[in-house]
Length: 235
Image 1 (cartoon, helix red, strand yellow):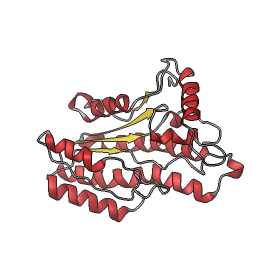
Image 2 (cartoon, rainbow, N blue to C red; image 1 turned 90 degrees about the vertical axis):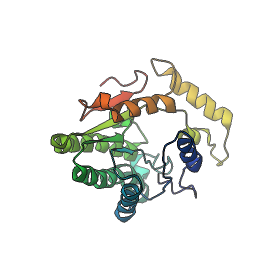
Image 3 (cartoon, rainbow, N blue to C red; image 1 turned 120 degrees about the vertical axis):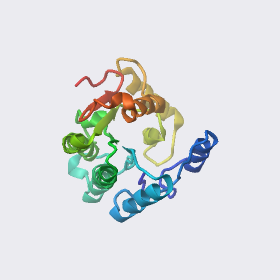
Image 4 (tube, rainbow, N blue to C red; image 1 turned 135 degrees about the horizontal axis):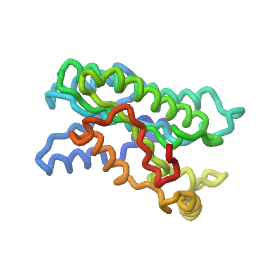
């Protein structure tokens, strides 16, 4: 995940997660890359194939952090726009392109799961770059699904609503730059009240849907953009 404002790239506990997988008797690689760089993506795909022998599932979950892009279009800089579009949309394209090529060579089918958003279904003020990137992910998903269907490779998008993760920490940022956890909590509560099911999404909600789309049970599902937003988006 590319997070220019965080020196660790935004990953938290990546090595620990890989270690947990290892305790279950499975192999895991903890690799980092810039999803905007095709050469780095090709290197990660090559390392995966060399180490694990095959590539069956790709989950495109990289995202630019909220920041300077959260502004009216008249005040939105080209640099802020480019960071969001290059990471969220171009990164999805580059990773899917490389993974699809590997899956086609294997001739064993596969799964590609792209992370969109409820902002890929509805536009929101001060989020033009983010909405454009996530609308684009859905269009890309639909087109790629049609291309890869003859090879048995399914391509779907997940459209989460707001989730209570560190990505929403910006809601607690005061004008002076300080962080106020009570402000963050109040902002999250306001958003939760607008959701029919009365709460924000959890990482487990999104993970369960991702696991389903990656499984054999979803073999007849492709080209879909599935909402997981507590009823706040219904189309």
